[in-house]
Image 1 (cartoon, rainbow, N blue to C red):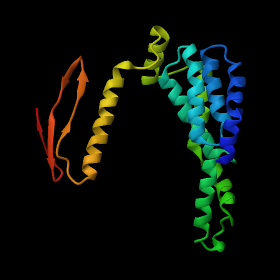
Image 2: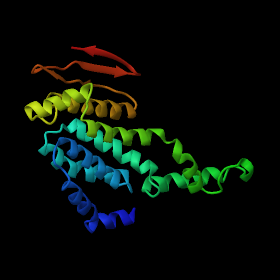
Image 3: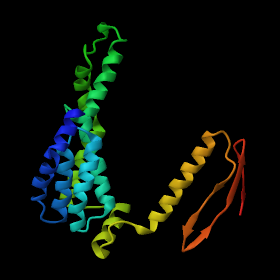
Image 4: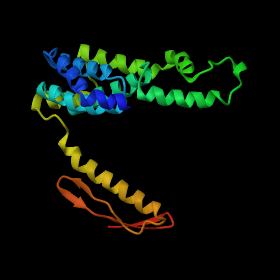
Length: 219
């Protein structure tokens, strides 16, 4: 983790991103380069998400690629590549867990005698990681989208609206509601929570009076 911080501080990560961005010529190459960047930054999934999400946004915005597609690319390269890389912070954590597990298993069980050996034996069976990485590049190469992603890409390419603004307010209200209810529930009793829904510029505020996990709604 300390070495990753040194690399970031010295500008190694940003330099790699700048080199890759020179390859961008259009929407397909923008997606492919963003995925390549996510694959190249294999040493930490969190650093990957922050760096690729920030740098890739300037690339994808230029070619009207939706934020939904950018989020998909970042998510499908950060954790999967860290999960199959031979050296990453996540693999270091896994190896530690494997070492602890092997210490409780007899050596005669036919397993490797160290956590890294167990990781290498399990590596070929990480199907999700390999499929997720492969699918990102396949979609970028062929330029095919389907379902909600097609809707998002069509909106971005035809209108220039990179993110769905209509869902932003509703998502914020939902998140605030969940946090409020969970916080009060953790205290032992929910006394009052206000639900706010925004649709067609109309706001309704039903009240919840809850005690002992039983709630009554009052309009």
